[in-house]
Length: 254
Image (cartoon, rainbow, N blue to C red; front, side):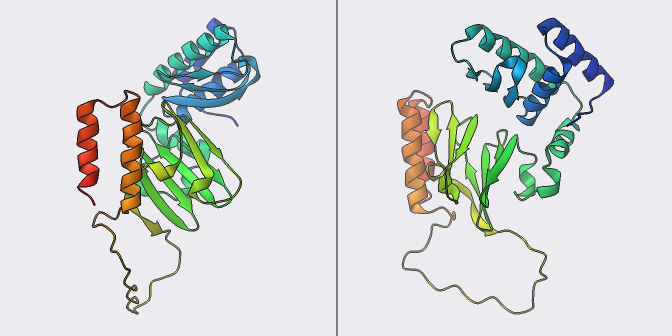
């Protein structure tokens, strides 16, 4: 895929390629990967950089040969420089990257979330990650659910056999987790269709034995979120005060 950037950016990429002893195609591919990650992360497959790899701003850098520390340092320095260049581009860069990545023609997540840093999926289950908003959107079986990612900075995703949100596994700076450990911030909603609404009044829903909390978050989801927070607290990611405040906030929703 050919990527079009302003002349000054093209010149900067040529300079980076010369200084790092890489081809311009490799630098352009990595720059695009950094752009898709919002300047905070990148997933790439570039032969000159050891094949498949991942980079996270201020986090772990992974390359094909995990023992090649020199290559790790080189990729980290290169990605940091490209992230700085990405952040210096005009604001429309985000929309351009989204269009190049194919996002604009298939915007299934809530519009107010903007453009995701990464998106994908299979078997009718899709995800979109929005690091600035700390939101993760999951589409499954014609429904979209938005989750609060808490303190997670998602850097990877894998999908097991099957379908549904449980088939997705995400990795962050604190390990691997599933969406069941995240609180729902937006009730599950049926995706809109092209069918025009009718004038008929909707059939009232049958009453359930236990009403859901007014916040739209189930008790099980709240308990799972508290357990996830406890894990972050145990690892030192959250202070005592932060853990107590977030726990009290979640308990107030029961």
